[in-house]
Image: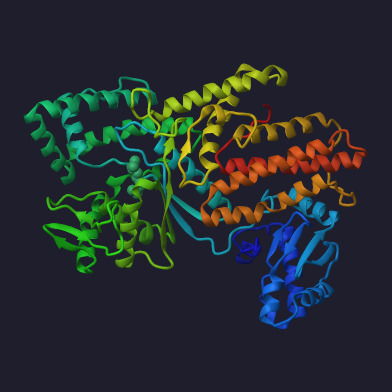
Length: 606
Ligand code: ARG
């Protein structure tokens, strides 16, 4: 049923102070389950299989299977169940339909009272319980590469990862963030050697460098050293020797390497800042951070027989994991020249995350093109006993960002598109959209600029988050900032419109009036709000932010229907005005919370 998790909260564990408000769905579920076991004692733990329905508020389908098992007539059993249901103030009508379904309608009073309890919840949980069995998740996301430009692939990892972090934390999970940046490897020999020979290239005299300057410094250096590397054999030899020095931990070499890392971080942080995303420096633990563990990782794998020598290289073999050409591929943990690669680092990172950080879930928000790598790495870690049924690893693989033409996203010159350029363009477009209404809304230039950023960045994030991660999606700015359809700006306008109504309400304050009858559109909106808690737990459990995006879009759609059918400030009685203000205010809070979990701002005036 829709209620896979009970709504028991951490209160029993003493972790969180407030129990969240139990959903109507959970209450109905409980009543039906009680009636089921009263009517059929052997059905004590049976699931009534409750679903939202168009015919009534809910439909319960669970009786059919039960009747079959008990060799009873389903309609008869259904009638017996109905007779044993305790309706109280909750249920208005339960009726048997079809071969033995139950159609359940709840009272208007129950809807309003339940929503009012959420509205009054001082913890602002909006009906979202803490997850049972919350644990520790280590999530690997937002991991660009030092001395390299950031592209749309890095955008996806950052946006999806950040949403998953926020959602998990909101449900009570302990989350450790790891930004596994590419800060190690042979290319640093070339870069460092060049810097030794041109010592002042990365010096900043006075003042801070901007992100853009940092990147252009790195680009310049990269190009110059590359050119030298390709044309000058002696430089090439010196660069190769420099790699050995780096791996041996030579202090002078390390100091210069650190300069590249620091310069790159200035750039990364400026981009993440533009993305309105908090990245904390201690969470940036790049590939180099596992350097000291590589040797031991290999030794452990070798001693346990998980990895074996193959022509001088240390490898793990798999029968059931095949490469793109259908042939089995080994995982190379250590190359025959003694060098460690990407896999050794990831295996060491698993040991660190499981044994030091005490993770019980490892998540990797990484491009689907690296799925083979992670399959092999996870299987190796399982064989080594580092992962098991209690400690699991999962790649949240994401697809490719495509251009409007449906081909991988490239500039007209065929180069990969710089992430910053894309973000700037989104902000420009969004600012134009905001400006169109700015006069009517009375926005200052400053507010226009701020809203432009929130709408532009929100559009980019939402487009990414509103399709399931594994799917490729088209980067289409026109569509992203469109006011109609499944876009963030549509949701942002829905939020701002409510704020505008609340400002215009004058003396009238939002207040719940459970005695009032509700119009169909009010009930639909209310019942959708009721689903927020269970939906969010499901989203957290499955690491699927796109389902939250879909929920919010439906919420905004219910709101649109509600406006069409139910005047708010011009409602018939003062009580109805108050009740509708309360309903839209709760909707606004839910929208705002949901959007915030996706990393998207909701401006008050738009
Ligand atoms: N830096 C890599 C890239 O840009 C992503 C790192 C993914 N994380 C990991 N633990 N391997 O492709």
